[in-house]
Image (cartoon, rainbow, N blue to C red):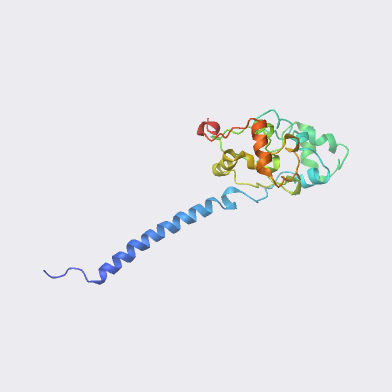
Length: 216
């Protein structure tokens, strides 16, 4: 029986198959890379705000404690966005006529909240409680980075599930004494694991990795 296909067809078939597999791998890797890029995660991207509030100035230069503005962070699931009244506690006296602060003064006068752009915004299907983490010795810096060095706020970490699980699986690597939770410049000791294991036991920290812990 005469040969129907030319011998080169075998080579073309092999190249097509392996080329298709290679293309699929490249596409998967490209999607994974994009999914972890700052374009998607927002990591390192400063958010424009109605008022250019500088954590570097207020926290780093003026030494204002996180809890002065984020009043509910120790006893609520939500850290709290500071009210205009908190801003005006100082700014009725300091830079009271600054054009930059006009939206703040207008908000205080009318009672209309300023529409801040959320930097750390978890999906609706994720449950997160600030108070639990704070009281278990998780520092602000661990999740939010050195906000005292941020002229404008940006996301320091992706907040992806794999990032959260890294801490939930090995809390001894990340926890700190409660009195240093709000410290921006606290550095872990060289024997962090020894300290961490002690705090895990003292604070009764569990390695919670069940889906229902966060997805309720």
